[in-house]
Length: 464
Image (tube, rainbow, N blue to C red; front, top):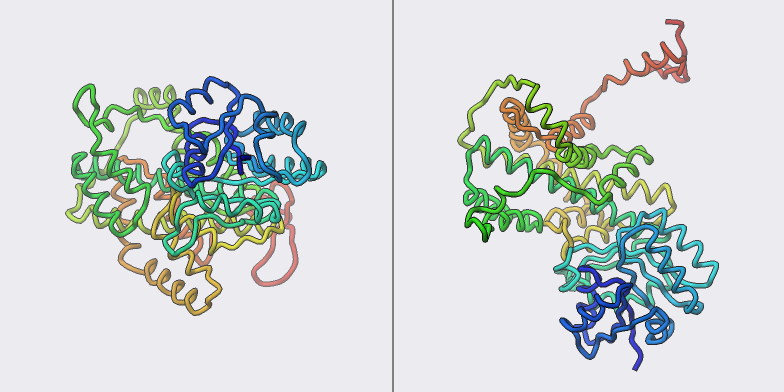
C-alpha cells in the first residue's frame, strides 16, 4: 500500500504534524536528513500508518501519485536544497508543500521555478505550536489553487475545528499569500505578547500583585477573551521551578528572543506604507531587552526622575480596558496590512476567512476574531452592526482608562512601548490635523521637495 502524503523534517512541528495526520488513519511517509532522528521517532511513536524512509528516493517511491510532500524544515537555503534533491525523483503534477516559516518572496521564487518543471508548489503557513501541530493547527495555504484542491481533503482532516462546523484551513490566494498571512499572524502575535508583558509589568510593579494574583487575574480576563496567549500566561504564573520550589517566572532571564517573522512584518509594512506601530514597537522591545550591555550601562549611568503615582483601586479595570483596545487595534493593523498586500500583489484574500481560520488551533486565537469575521462578512447588515459596536467600544470610558494607564506607567517609569504605540496610532487616525505640514515645509526649505496647499490644487515651492 502506498502512502497518501509525506512529511520531510522531524523536528517538533514536523514530527507532531506527521503524528496528527497518521492518527486520522492516513498512511504517512516520513524522512529526516539525519536517519537517527527518523529511527528515534519511529521507536517512540511508530504505528502502521507511519512509514520510515531512509532516502528521498525511497520516500518518493513510497507515495501514491500525484505525490504530496510537506516540508517541515528551517526557512532559507535548506528548503531550496531539499527541493533540488527532490526534483530528481518527482514527476509533473507532484505537489510540494512548504509548511515552514519561509519568507513569502522566497515562496514566490520557488513557485516560479517549479512551475517551469511542471511541479506544483504550495506555501503554507502553519500556526499552533507543537500542541497545535499534534491536535489540530490553523493552516494558511497559498499558491497553486488546483494543487491545493487535490491536497485539501487530507490537510483538512488534520486542521483544527473552527467552532462553526468547519476547519481552520482555507485557500488564501495565489503566489506567496499563504506565507504572507502567516508572517502577519506572527507580527500580531509579537504585539499581543508584548502587550501582555506590559500588563504583567504594571500589575506586578505598580499594583504589587503576587504571581498567584496575576494568574487569577489573567484567568478571569480569559473567560471573556478566550485567548490562547492569555490562557498560557495565566498558567505560566502558576508554574513552580522543580529545583527551588519557587515560581519559575521569577528565574527567567528578561532577554526576549525572536526568529525574524516579526521583523519581516515590519519590513513589509514599511515597504507597503501601512502604519503598524504596535508591531514595530513589539519587535523593538525584544531588541531592547536583548541589548544587555546597553541596558547595563544605562542602569549604572542614567538617573530615573519619576513622578510616582500610587496604584489606583481600580487598576485591574483600567488595565483590562487598555489591553482590550490595544489588542483589538493590533489585529486591525495586521489585517489592514494583509489587505494592502493583497491589493499590491493582485491577491484575492478573504479577510473574513482569514479571521475564521485563526479562530482555533493558532497562537493568536481569541474572541476578537469573531468580531473581525463579522466585520468583513459579505452580510452587509451584520458588518454594519459590528462596525457600530466597535465605534461604541472605542468611544467609551475604556478609552479614558487607556489614557490613564499610560500616564500611570510613564509616571512610575514602566516602559509600555506597544500600549503607547497603539494610542498614538489611534490618535493619529482621529486627529483632524497632524503636524507633518511643518515637515513638508522643512523638506521644501532644505531640498526643494515641494509641498501641497490646503487652499488650492497643485504642488508648490517657496524660496524660504
